[in-house]
Length: 129
Image 1 (cartoon, rainbow, N blue to C red):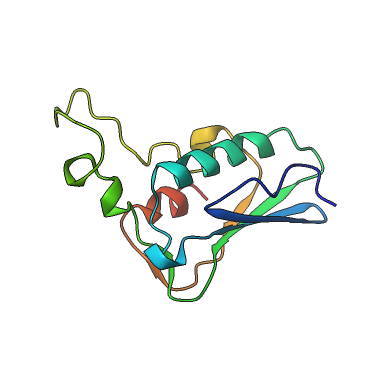
Image 2: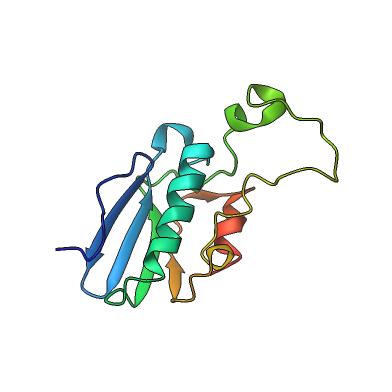
């Protein structure tokens, strides 16, 4: 049994196996590209795992074998169908800024099991672990 909620996600699969939390990105139809939902779920999960003492390490992967993550979902980009955005470099909020564990102050070891393509915004995840 997990020491935290592993069932309330729509873009992630989560399990606890002993002292290790296993997280899979689960948007195979979009090659695990991140959108607002995935960003929110993953950021929230990193912050939850900070305080789950029985979890000592995390493995991050993706379902399937075609892609680990292909970056931002193009349907999530403001100019291409998302929210209104003025494109000023002074007010730009990077949509991937809170994807990684360290950006959410999770200091437990995280290992990425990359299976398939990893490009673009995938490096928000790979660069922090």
